[in-house]
Image 1: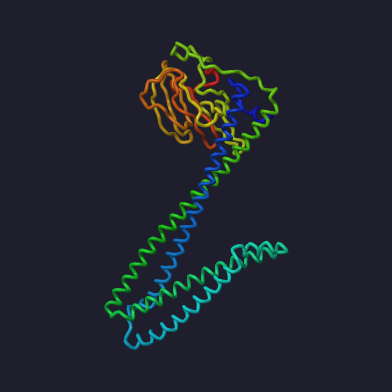
Image 2 (image 1 turned 90 degrees about the horizontal axis):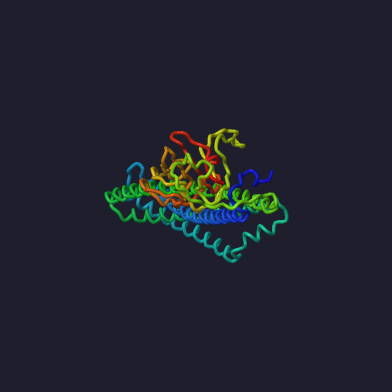
Length: 381
């Protein structure tokens, strides 16, 4: 069975169907580009957040290292100050040594050029050698980051201890307490950044899932187009013309009511629907039309708008009340041009079509009092 045979093709010419499907494909391609662009922006934003997290964590660790010396609220006596002064001299020499070592590594890396790591990987003679070199480069990069963090921490402690030597005991207490307050603020900021990172990662996952869904839809549409073009002779086309009718009693118009859109391509029929993947059965109170996003939606008869709103799964919805207890429902809309209470005329454009998780579509229902009726029996195809 051809893909297009799975749909009920009615009230449309070959060219109209082909054009609409190509519009749907174009829309999806734009959606994919937009979603991938969003992922790129989020990746950049996440990298900035990670840098901020590293910076704040480094600051917190440095303050913790400094505060360890004052956990017991004991402050330096004159003798201890002398000892501390000598320790600061050694610490300064250690900082200088680490700083010089890091500087030499940076210079060495610069001399090798920006593509050194890539060249090292590409020059691997076997897959195992490639993996070993890749692991080495990752470890080397992590070591560089650790050395830089250690250097910053030691420089921080060195500067703080030098400050402490210039303070009186009471001032030292005040200064230590200020560092504790600073740590609390940094820890709060760190928590905010990690929450922000989690949100951006969730947003990225959502967009990635959207790209996958769009790519599946695009593949289905392209298959449809290919099969449709290859089997042109099997399609009996019919041109749909929208008509005016004087009667407002839909009971008298059964089988002759205008379509709510310009293309009568039904993707899901009225009644019970079986999901081939989950085997679950659900009830469809209307029909779903396959049609490109932002196509015009028309009122099927005179009436009054009773509801305009959002309904789970169906998205934006318009419900119009007609005479003789009839109501028409237009769902999965991308744009709404009316509001509750508006008086509507036959063939008036009331909105534009949108999409669901299944693809670009327009859901339509027709109710007689409290009972849904099969639109295929009432609409004119």
